[in-house]
Each structure stands twice: as structure tokens, then as C-alpha cells.
Length: 356
Ligand code: TLP
Image (cartoon, rainbow, N blue to C red):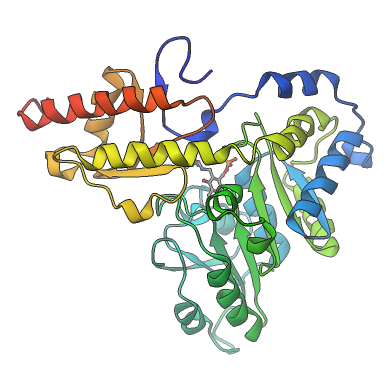
């Protein structure tokens, strides 16, 4: 397991999770067919399950979250349209500019508050029909919000955003890569988060532990369009049941345990908050992500990450002074205690001037 054999504690991301034994077994035994003909029974079953779970008509399995976002933006827009999104969103930051380079849309970033767009800012950004302006057709939200620290956009906030979107005839799309983290944290059915968006995607390959896969969900017409665009992008798959089989286990068995990751993130964050020179905005620690500001130690995030690595703890870069740590399956309470002692040791050394 991630934190197993070589004693390295890997908090870089929940994407590092390995499939469970049960998932590997399910892959071995999956009933397969050619999904290009819609004949893979395991894929069909997963897509039906996913649509039902999200309270939408249909679903589509895609290889990655990045492709899910791109397929969805393309299925919701036409080239040249303007897309409103949060300035720190994954689509804007981490997807190699795909929505510009491939979808041909104009991203219109707006800064949110703890990851959430303010409906008034969205309304102000929607430009009227005018020969000079691109048509604004889509608003994208992210839930939980990765760069904001795994923060939750509440069902009420989504409803308010959708109200504005619908007033102006816009679609509302949710990058719900970690939407089950949000649902588990608020202890509500995931449909509370999906009912006010037109369509969304979620990832199987993060906290849910699958090796590959994300799912796009929406109405039947949207998913048909998405299926064709997935094909255009080279994402059409054949015996994809080997990907879908662990996805079924993920939906059946891996959701409720996310709570454990949230508890561990909280313990980690509260422990770090007590260490001199490190700063954490505890209001942001709502799910499984912890952002640590290391500027009080007079070092950059890169330097701090390198020091942690020397002691067997892996964390990831967020920005110049901020380090990200993510809890996930395979990270136990003991790993968190050990991680805290490494962080404390490294911070203490840096405080005493050893910055090399
Ligand atoms: N996020 C990864 C990195 O790309 C940063 C991570 O380690 O957190 N939406 C959101 C909100 C995501 O966090 C990610 C992955 C994606 C989309 C893309 O998913 P993949 O990696 O499957 O393309």
C-alpha cells in the first residue's frame, strides 16, 4: 500500500491510492465486450449505477478527470463561447489549457471565496448579446474545490448559482472530482449536490481508489454528445469493463470510508497548527486536503517539501509558500502521528536556522 513497504508516507494526493484486493479480483473476473458497440456489460452496469446515484438520466465512463472536464465543456458549448469558471479551478490551472486549445472556448475566470463563486459576480460577468461579445453559455464550478483546500460548495450555494445561470439561459456544470467527499462530510445524499447542476463529472481514481476512470453524468442528449466527443478525442474504449469493474466496487463500498480520511486530515491540520512557523486556515479543512503555509519559517514550499522527503514524507506543491497534503485510503492514524512528528522535526530545524 502507499505508505507500506518502504515506510514512505505519501500525502501528495489521493490519486496515489492503489486498487483494493477486491477490485483486483473484480478486474480479473469482469464480464467484457466491445464498448464501441456498447456491448461491455460491466461498463453498461457502471454507467447505469452512476447515473442513478447522481439522479441523472445517463452516464459515460472516460479515462481521466481531465478528459471528463474537456468532454463536458465541449458537450455544453460551441467553439468561441465564453465559459465562466473559478480562477483557481482545476480546469483553469491544471488541464494544460485544453478548453482553449481543444474546445476553443474563452475561459472567463472569477475569483471565488473559499472556492465558491458569488452568484452576483457571475451575473456581473455575463455579457449581453452584442456583436462584439462571445456568447456566454456555461458556468463551471468545482466541488470539493481542490486549490481552495478541499472546501465544499454547499447545495444552497449551487442552487443560487443555478438560479442566475438559468435566468440567463446558461448551463451549470460541476467538476465533482471529489463530490463524494463533499457528500460524506455534510452527511447528505450526493443528489443534493447534483440536482441543481445540468451535468457533472466525478472521479473513480481519487479517494475511491480505482486505478483509472472518471464518469460524466447528465441528461441523455448531453451524454450522447459526450460519447461522440470522447470518441473524437481518442477516448473511446473497447473492453473497458476492466476499468468499470473496480468502479462498481468503488460506488458500492468505498464512499462511506472517506469519513476516515476527513478525520485524519483534521487531526493532521490541528497538529500542524500547533507548530511554530507553520500556518493553516482551519476553516478550509473540510474534507481530505490540508494546505500549509510555510512562509513563517522563511522557506519556500519547494524547500519544505524537499526536507520532508528526506525524512520519508511526501507532500505536494500548491504555490510559492503553500504545501498541500492529502489523506486517503492506506493512510492510517499511525501514519498521521508519524507525519506530524516529521513535520515538527523539519520545522524545528528550519527555525533554528538550518535552511540549506
Ligand atoms: N487533481 C490532481 C492534480 O491534477 C492536481 C490532484 O492531485 O489533486 N478535477 C479536480 C478537482 C482534480 O483535483 C483533478 C486531479 C482533476 C479534475 C483531473 O483528474 P485526472 O488527474 O484524472 O485527469
